[in-house]
Length: 245
Image (cartoon, rainbow, N blue to C red; front, side, top):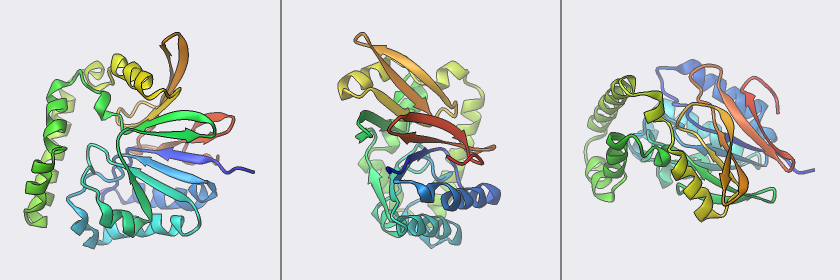
């Protein structure tokens, strides 16, 4: 019997919210351990200042929990989010995970499925789109990683606060994905399903692309109860974290 595949995103783990981290550890043991694979589609951490930050007890504990899951035979894949796009190969080794580019197309039980964090589709927010292009450039990242870790942490904290303030002044429509961008991605990828996070609006959407129906699953964040997507040969379901698959 084939085991299910799990998808999560937007956990935003940080020492400031230990309950969320403990919730995550419990979910890994109770639910994810029964899966074939776990895909973390961005923003596992509230921010990531560089792989040398693995030295912190909190970050090390998260990596160790994922490694324990990988050692049970569950394949783990991690995609960069808008908060933790500096996750690198040292983190991948420490957690037993494979880093994925955004977007990535996979064969999910026979269904061509496109995976993304989701922020790349938020093109209506031009201010954020410009910021994303800047921080994803190799030049910016090299310059940032050359700074002392303590300084990088301070910059990341400041950027997080600035992001919260900016979001508070923007409309829900502006912060959501651009539907035309979604349709174009589905068209070019040839996929009939898209799974993404970032918008914190868990739902299943149907898109008509070239006369055919294609589905889009949006993952939940973990600020409250949290949620995950479980996919099997017969389809996918969004579940609360406390609900067994």
